Length: 45
Image 1 (cartoon, one colour):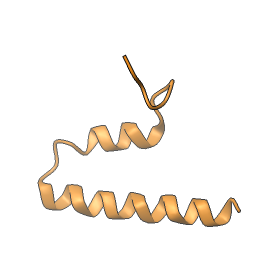
Image 2 (cartoon, one colour):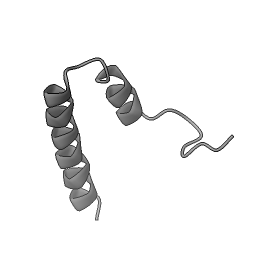
Image 3 (tube, one colour):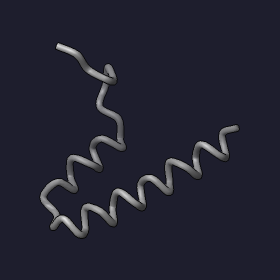
């Protein structure tokens, strides 16, 4: 059994909660989360 992370991250919880959304909304959520992740990466450097 291979896991990427030892514990479920908040981001993964959000992704799991969006899997029941329509495909178009899933794409919008993914775009938003990618933007947030990019912003956090920039701010943390």
